[in-house]
Image (cartoon, rainbow, N blue to C red; front, side, top):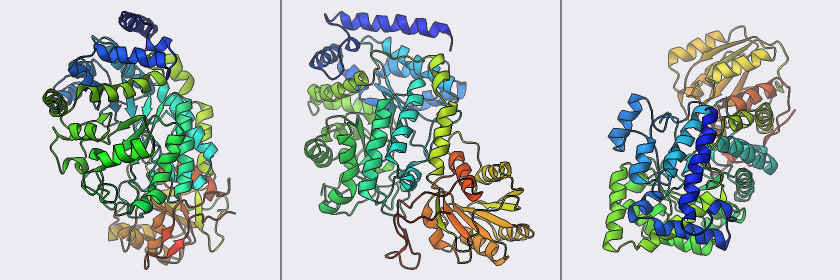
Length: 604
């Protein structure tokens, strides 16, 4: 990114200002956001838009490539195949989309300067339209298990780890720092925080993405993180309304059904969303779930007028932007066709339509609904006004572009990385230490075995290597022997042989489950007589499925570098464990009873 970018920013923004000023009034950037004057200007912009331009503003789309105009050939081919355009600039010119979502797998997030250049190219394309408008660029930067912008950006502990830390101050700081780094590369909407209350240990899609199982505690953390992000002019987005924390089906592949009563919803699921709204949140994302007590029609919540308008808009009083979860997920596609889903979503109360599988089908479905009178144009206008208000409030009319200097001053700074490391130390939870084996004396020989799940975006990984390196740096001779999430009998036997002569074995599990291969690995290691330290790399529930005899057990809630390195410092006694379980761990033989309750956690 060169100095010419700043000049291009000035020229293009001037063109946008001139186009809007031609309406006879100053641009939104010259009127205070949220005022009647600003609203008049935004309505004047909407009045200039054609039906097609209005429809486009409702979509937030994926697009392949690291550049808005010159992506790699493979990404051009993917764009042509899925979107009918070559690149982001053509997508904006053809469909007038109001937003773009960045994904690692779409090759949007190679490094901070590349992301900033891509964002600037996208904004240039948006401001080159007949009605010049900045785009709302978004991503899923939850931290922990779900992260799209990786190193050298600052990566924080995930939500359940933060819940274990319990500090609303830390949650607000996370939002403020993460928001500042996202804004520096041109991302102005984050699909975070997760406001689901995870009361189902078998939840296949939420789990550690949730702050925990206590609605009041989750509500406090959600509100704090919302304020942090929006302190940095990034729109926070609470998800997944009306609550995805008690599901046993993944909405990516099926349609979950929530069996809570209306009273249970009020007590369990609603508090974090109420807190987010009270904190002034910009956006709320819907869930592709059926919730019969809230809507007996069994339409997914994303398409439910009783849930989105009756409850979210009217009962909870939310007048911000409502965005769908991805429209490519099976949970919203089972009942209706891809041409009808966007229409029904708008009729339910949605504003932004996220990433439909076939944009032309979704776009034409809306166009047909407007032409037939099923969707009045005024309904489009209402959603576009909310979207433009959000863009104005987050400074996109005034400052659509970012700079190389801003990236260098903000992303992955020493202070930010230190803040993340310090937070992680406050989240590691010591579940058991029956022999007082921990902390480990310096110089002990350690074998690191266990699961090696793919690292979340942009961390170095894999877990066994990260742990071995971190402990080696702390003065422990180490050997890493990854055994995977489904270790074979041969791998289990090899790990047991490798334990001979070691002072202790650290074994990482990843969603171990009852009677699984990971549990057999732990049992085989315990049988060697060498002290075994268990590390739950993701869900803290793993300890319930382990045979007795381990010397200690800790939960890290994720396998990102920042959390694993903090766990190493806890193991070595450099810091004392301070985390407390934000969820209960049920007994494996009787799930109605707790092995460890919410709030459990030991220290030295």
